[in-house]
Image (cartoon, one colour):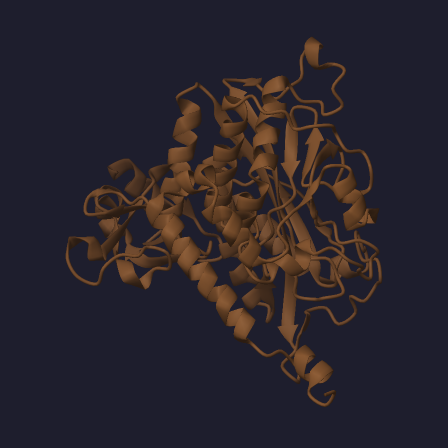
Length: 445
């Protein structure tokens, strides 16, 4: 720790931002003077356990304390907070790894792969909105002139946010992230940033770093950075697409060999079995990948001003098919179900468990689908033997509760907490009387 402290001091760091992630995928933490680096790395920064979403910890006794124990590999000065360095913490309670810490959940999932000599690499693609409040309190795109019916790749709107986007790019690059591209997405005020893929744990850590940077930089410019899945009913929502590959050393295990040449997926047998597991457990995975009431406005499909929603509704796979839940590509697949509100640690861990189940049972993903599934009515989907993704948070939670493989990845504590908290969210939504209901029904009967 002496060398690390001296390096940080030389970089002008005086304070540590000890950060962990709660059940909702929100960054939490506290500031700790650099002088206490050793304590952060050995014991961890302490927090009142019951104050953190999803812990289920008691208010008294030794298990009332939650410690975020620093991972030295994550220590990184933050350009937008001069003098402050982030360190990601793993959850510990009563001296042992806390089973309901999302990062610990992912550690367990990746350890199952490591037992076979495998490593998971992911490229996570966050889409997001830049918003502001209008005079009447309504949420609006931050750019008043962002109004095209088909706004993808708009080079009129993109330069107007160049100050924010370049600050974001510069900050992320300074933190070691390889930013590949930034574009205007298919809704007003919506953007996407792509990073180079990497180790699955590091990818999740980097996504949380991206969110910290984007929130701070947007707020400094009078905007709100939003990863709400679908803020505007008539426009596409924000995805969090996962590009997934499995490796043994420097050999990609999803690369198809000579025996796979006739398969349209471009994947090896192992890759196809992994995809089959993801599809077999898709309803339960949906609860982790699309974990909010609003998530299902994105997955419901339907018309949008741009002509499409880009969000899958059908449990299917297909080569370079962006209308299916899984888009297959040579040596990897893109899991298109997750939205911007997903907790990256939990979504990744659950996906790993589903994929391993597919490999263990030797599952087949079924025929590849090359059709535009957005054009198929429900009857045509059923006629082809395909199923739909859950169309509400309630439906997804029911599927999760009945899926022992996905629940096993989360562990008993987190499964119980997740179901309890999310069912409360659904119940609150079900009781809410919206403006749409009043406009439609108040004077009708």
